[in-house]
Amino acid sequence: MNALTTMWIVMCKELRDILRDRRTLVLTLVMGPLLFPAIMLGMGALTEKKLRTQSEKELEVPTIGLERAPNLVAFLATQGIRAVPAPEDLEQAIREQRVEVGMHIPEEFAADWRAGRPALVEVLVDTTQRDSAIPASRVQGALRAYGAQVGALRLLARGVDASVAQALNPGTRDVATDAARRGRVLAFILPYFMILTGFLGGMALVLDATAGERERQSLEPLLATPAARGAIVSGKIAAACILGLATLLLSLLALKSSALMATGITRQMDVSMLAIAKMLFVLLPILLVGTSLLTLLAASAKSLKEAQSHITWLMLLPMIPSLVLMANPVKTEAWQFAVPFLAQNQMLLRIIRAETVSPREWAIYLGCSLGLALLLWGAAVLRYRQEKLAIST
Image (tube, rainbow, N blue to C red; front, side, top):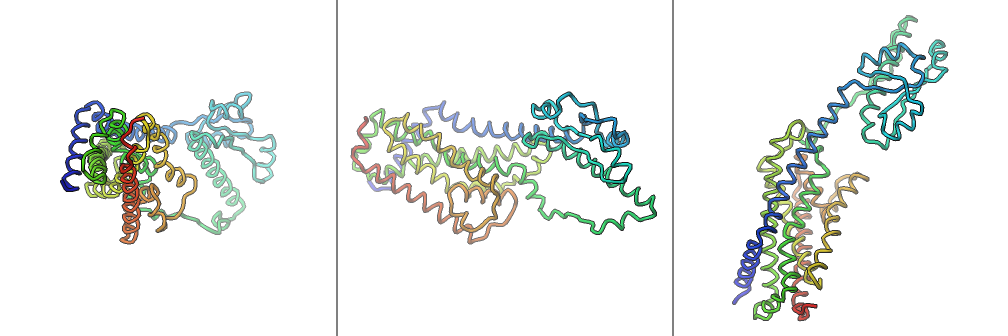
């Protein structure tokens, strides 16, 4: 019996075993693809509703010294901002999130205003509260507009054109492509979810095929056959890759359908079949890495419970690049395509943003990813060649 025949037989055996366990199969193939559209649609709807509500609704701003600037209060009302009397401890109310944003008009406001000096108006905000960003920016923008309007009228009253005082007219041109702006919507959660799906897609089969069979003492008869250990390992890994590939395909198709069903900016994502095919191609190496690593860990575990305990820290690995890039954004460089998980993150972001991946970057990515998968496969084969593997403890 040659190695390919052995590999084929072992692969078919493992796939037949997982097909018998229908509950596990359903949880693996259905829960992820169904859960992701729900998360994506729900998150997109909530974000869009929150932005629309905070940007369009009338904003009540508790104000200390409300009576000191009636003209300012009247102007703010025309901008959809209604100044109201402040509670006794406005700062504490903001910290406790009972108030989103507040204002303080000091006692010297009127004197500074009559003297033509810049009059202070403080915007009170807790920058650690995410809900305060949009209301605070609305108030600050309205105050800047009022200040510019009054300043222009003062110059005009003195016979001076207001444009003379404006030496520069700064402007901003956003050169980002439409695809890049659309990709910013899910730039953090989407790569993590897809990498995690590829990395642990074959988890159920891998753990049962090694640690589970070891506990059931059905691994020893298989290892007692004349079949090469490398072929046995390859068959188990191939079966897990097939299951992981099915999970990836369903997840990517769910991504496509959920983006089409979504509203607003989420609907504008590029989910063409070409983009889906590129994502699948990018995730195939991490699928090989994940199944090989899980095979090695499961073969080194003394029980199925011990093997399952590795899942906790393995789920955190794909999250590291997203957290690092969120806290410390860096320019994309060639070395990043050689780092596991960071490479997949960067490649997926390129695809989401519809950017071109150079042949050099493809070569670095595929070479390093497949090389790591080969090393882990070799380590799993060496572990399977140890005779004590078949002994259940």
